[in-house]
Length: 386
Image (cartoon, rainbow, N blue to C red; front, side):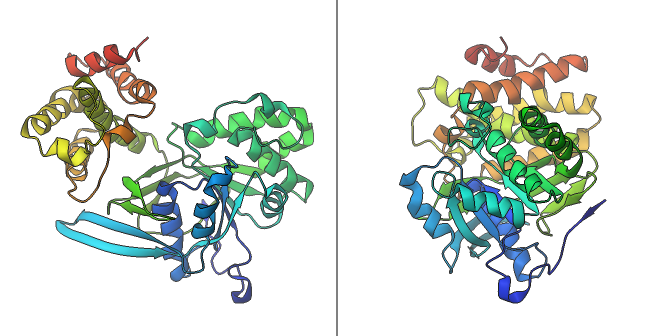
């Protein structure tokens, strides 16, 4: 159903050929995909190293780009509670061989996409997927959205012989592979029927879900993260994995995992933010400090018990949801993570729409009779149900 190409790269080419092309330089990717691949490389269980691409073209971040590809790697500090014990360790991530920018290095990025890449990863944030007037251009423009830039790279690969390839978005978008595929097919159609047909038949767009709280960056590269991590990938024909890792799993259907993360972990975050904003939004507030306040913790536990778990019970996910709530509460209370509510509050209204309003709608569709007054209050406060 899926494969991983092991030991594909000869030793002399180990850091010059990069079968993994990654769009995004975020601290999340550094502490998640890049770390996973680094650990897998050490065991001989990865396709090979990574070329990281900064898609914004922001010249002001050149220092981070250089640090990402430093021969010594960059540090990720992992701190928290793992299997009931306190852990604090530094992992040196050495999976990044190159760091390029679409603003200055597009020809080389296109060459790598055409000749080297087996998997294209992305985590470009909400802004990266926003449509742009430049998206309809026949050739690359810096102002293009990520889906349009990806279309141009796939066109370069098609013209170079058209080997199949896997595209694996990790953005927090439901059915992210399916949505990206639809965007790319729309953009490919004006560029030629043969090309559009190749995209439809030879490019595997994998739906995936990632989870790890990465609370702060390290300078000039690196991050601080919790021990918990997950990379779930939905099986599909032609799927090639970038690596094997204990925290990766291939599943037949992502829906159940997506619902747990979106409507427990993410919903809990946005609920805390809504109450924090209602109290005036002190900029330095941390999730762990909120959970250390007995009244806040009791209210969140009550919210999960009375307004969230009944919906999962109606969907026949009661046991796994209750277990996930317990894990989530421990993650929120992690004494090491400086997870700022002000960071979670970015794009708050849209997050409430996806995390809370959609959850309430799901409960209504299941005829759940729990009144959910607190969740509905948050929706009304943000206008997310309109």
